[in-house]
Image (tube, one colour):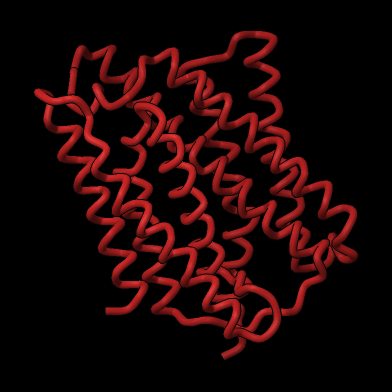
Length: 263
């Protein structure tokens, strides 16, 4: 069995164990999912490392490779947070996404990458970490919306017990966004400092959309601090900012690498 297949199976096993734990309302949440999740993370990261060592230039950061790396970052954050508290329910969504994107990357194949200076490499890794952190924030926003909706309708599903109280979930959401916003700020600053052709044709849309996302996330944090924004308003701002961020990199990369790529 290949390292990719084993990692995918471990991700799915961790997700199924989480579903089983959440559905069992008669017992406290189980931590059995941590073992397959940890194994999946190690193999997922090891696969990218193997590809980087065998590929000329720097690490593969093309479209599907970047998606796989972001999903790896999200899975790592989910495991770390879930191991300490009640946010393990995120893994029900994050782990299958990581498994799918790893499999797609493996199936699509690897492409040679340009050798990057340490400055550009740092910029790229900061960007991927920012996307992963804010991606977790977007999932938390969706969970917050679902929890508020269920509470308003008095529709108490078993999965609600896997989530922290509404106020705690909201606090975790804004803490995650604050960390992601800081990483995004560093990403943009490093881009200004280290990318010579920041406004080149292939980077204009990415730069503009990233700046717009940064403005929306920043406005949300200011609104939270000064005006107490919360609930559905916070959800809408978070998802709008994340949509801009996804379009900034993955939207532009999809067009450049998969649509306009010479055949």
